[in-house]
Length: 405
Image (cartoon, rainbow, N blue to C red; front, side, top):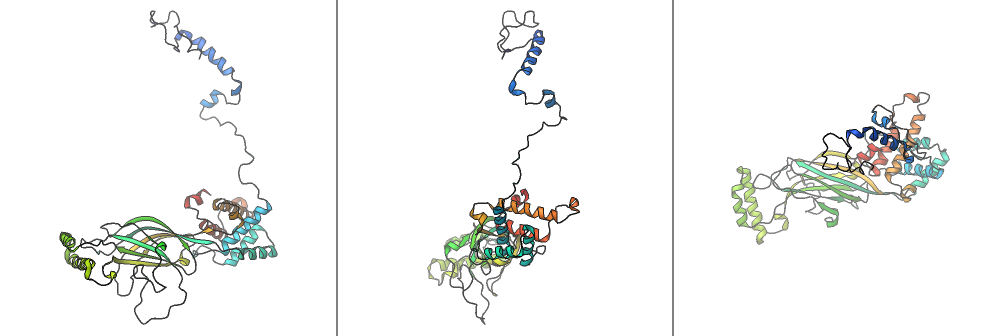
């Protein structure tokens, strides 16, 4: 500020216009001594700047950073006895109410996992039995299936132009009330449009539909859906792929003659004319002129891997007489939306519960390596990795969240 108050140049300055004063804040070579003296005074002043490092420390890139105060509250605090018991309950609940198929590298035996948790939390046999029975009496979690319809490939062409306009219909088929009687007729799979032998078609609220992808045999949807599961052991995910055909008049069908490709296209062209005539009034059932069937999938919910899966499924025919081809890529993940545990009731997120459980398992795994614990590389045992996989999946933690944890 003192330099801004200077309104006149130093007398005898080279290059200065004697008719015009120096601009405010300008510095001339003749004032160099005064300039550096003033800077020394500024550096000596400022009682509030005493905590800052010296300027030369800031300018040297190789200098160590100033000491940072340590926050005693940083990191995971020691859990109280009540919190340890709630975490133990959370772990037992995760194992007892698991759903889905275990992978080849995971421990499938429930008693082995429960025994491992007893060792981790250091409980006696009586305490472990009491805690296990209490969790078994708790309300079972509410399950949900997350479905991402990614894409399909090599579908059948149903339109005269050699392509199709595919879209997907998908929903959860509830378990049938009674076992089916063997039938001498051809096997007929469920179809959203044909209805079901399980008691009629599903209500509309249970069925979700993707967008229609025009003129393609390799559609890409990348759409996400969410379904609540009533019975995780018997419910099935059913998906149909259909070719969308608008009801067009006979004249409009004839106008598309220039889209016909080859003899197969000609056959599809005449079928379209027939469907159009039926749609215009004289035909029988509505099934005769609905969208063309391209394939279906039936996936039992219990067969979804506990860690989820991203895979291609081969499309199946609706009956032994129908002809389909192609594959559909789905991403499936089975999660829980409501859990009857103390940590859930207190509003603890699945992220925090996973972090506390991970910390507890790591401490146990490290202690179990003694006396050679210094060479431990952090590799978890099979039971530890299985428990964490189950809890992460049931808590709907993403791959990014698991990596951060």
